[in-house]
Image (cartoon, rainbow, N blue to C red; front, side, top):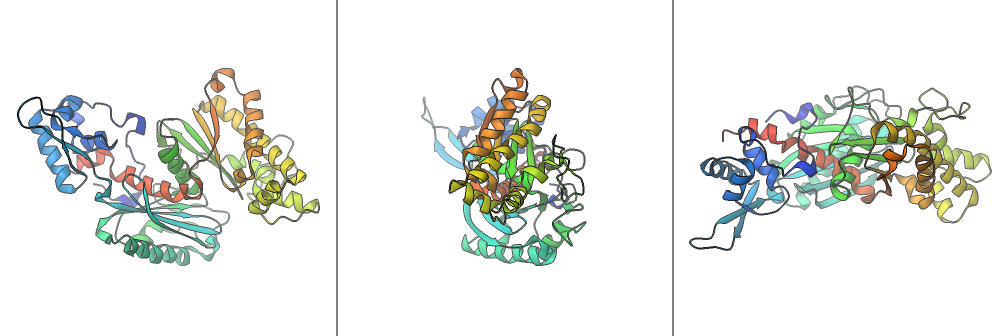
Length: 409
């Protein structure tokens, strides 16, 4: 297995393709494990038929997975004569992962099993502006406490995934010129955390891990997904073929800084004018409402005003949806996703944001691209980021190619 600290993107098969038969030459122990990750018990004969491997080869690889704890006996099938054949199934309890979702003003940690089920979690108010050492020390301290809560040693920890609220070079785990993260630019997050908890550490942008968590837990049947986080800022996580698409340097999905027509006088924190984030983010709406004599300190205040029936707030949220839809309409024509999922704190304002998004996309995008397109609210809630950070580690570590290369069977 390669060093997880490099953070190289996983080449694991997408969830909908996880259980397809693989060529015999490629069907190592990792491929057998991928077939069993759906939780369905299978016999050696069934695994042999699915992979094309000889029964003796399957037996050796099953034994290796049993020894590693990744699979476990799951009873016997009905016999047609003779001894009933034994079945084997994926063992999600074999290892655990720690996922950390770090936002501008919050931190969420979760310990999950290998199926992404949350075993324990903690949320806290934590300013990312405190700097990398203070924030990551908090992650390490509370991560160890969570391990104690579930009574699992560090030896059972498969790895740690971390999401940061800014641009991240995924291959190195370093933030690159993050606008709201003083002291984080170029900081070696994986090495700092790994020195304190000696396991592989992977780092990504917070919207990417939210997209991964939402896809894994709520929409696994959709191979092509766009996840929109509308909060203090606006970002997009892209799932292609069941995997996160990051682009050449990890900057894919930064839709908050795409120019919106008619917004030339809106100044963005990136230094440009007319950015989507400068007119449609929770921060932008709060500023606009305050200027109208309706005090609002941020996204959550906007949500509270909208829920209480404030007409100006509802109008602003609906227009924000239209502005987001304006940008997404081009993305729908270009990318042709199966589903667009709208999340983030601003989405808590009700149906108004999504209604605005739908209004423009169905008006502006091509009929073929929208024929089967679904636009829906996020389902996983505030835990999506921490779960997604854990899933990032799981998919990296259980990648069939990586496991096949690291096993002798």
